[in-house]
Image (cartoon, rainbow, N blue to C red; front, side):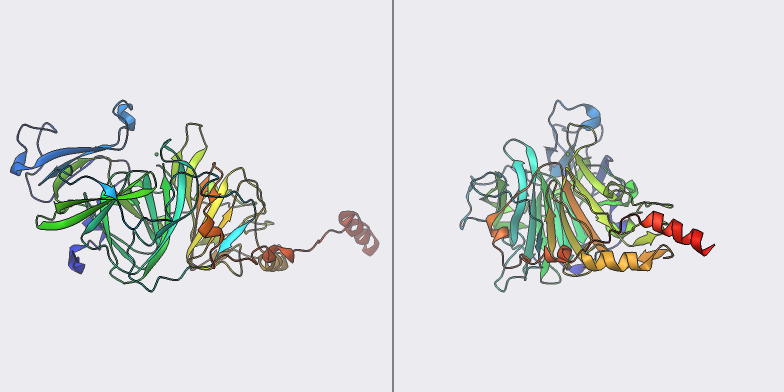
Length: 446
């Protein structure tokens, strides 16, 4: 199925807005049942089907579930079979068998989009992660590089939620709740279990994906956009459902599109967010705020204040702090940080960190500004006035878990083996008793 440009929403008004809300949407007026969720006969002869993102026993305020009213129920398919050929680079169970621990700072250059036809599913590969989808705790960080739309098939992730960050090329994503157009500079969240298909209207596309095996944040709730109901009623012989389950892919055939939902309501939905609408917080006197002030979304753990995964961005903003080293300070962190760059440059790395590239600084591994950034910053002195960081959008996936790194990521030709060199040039500026010498000189001059 090749979507037409006009069939994908382009304006904010083409979506529902809000975060954590309960929504209702109808592609045909009167398709939603009134007063109950599962009547004996649904309006328009539709089937009622619930999708739950939380257990039935979760407190009401934590419930995440939606009711879909569809032409045929999603259960109408042949048995699942292992997908052939097997996808060798998707991981959902990180162990010594399939991944390694490495405390060294690692940086990757941008990968090339493949020459051979490759859709979103086949272009997806794991970089690092921790935990297990089977144990329902952990995360995985993937990247993707694709050049063709998904053809007569849909993808479903039973292992966790996807947060997709496109870096080049728009994504036209069809979901069971409706359609989303996602541009570089936006992110999209596809909750566990939803079926979706990805079309590439611009051809080659590349980006980042975080997967968690629970979300809230500092962004404005009304800027989160949810698709409105739309549906496909046509027969689709040989349509394939690709199900990710335990890190492996399975396929099942059916004769209709999964996007046959005429109406739906609930709070378990896919949604997108435009990163340019984030209002960053910053210091207005001295010192540098920690990265948590730029958290867009967080997936919390059971321990208060500790995140399984934070999504943090570093957008254009003003730096005004006085007597302060304004780039991010040197630090070691009990969290592990995976960074990506959508466009522009990153304030702490003058060279080498490129759009489409990535870096990983694991738990307690030191990191911070490179030599060129440090020297240029202190050369400006305390008289440096307010400075605006322009033309940039960097982000970070931050987790309390230690990531294991996939072998193909460690062996990739895009690994920047000279990354450590960006700090080697840092020299000592130490001068003993500097304060005393300055004081004596001042007395002599007077």
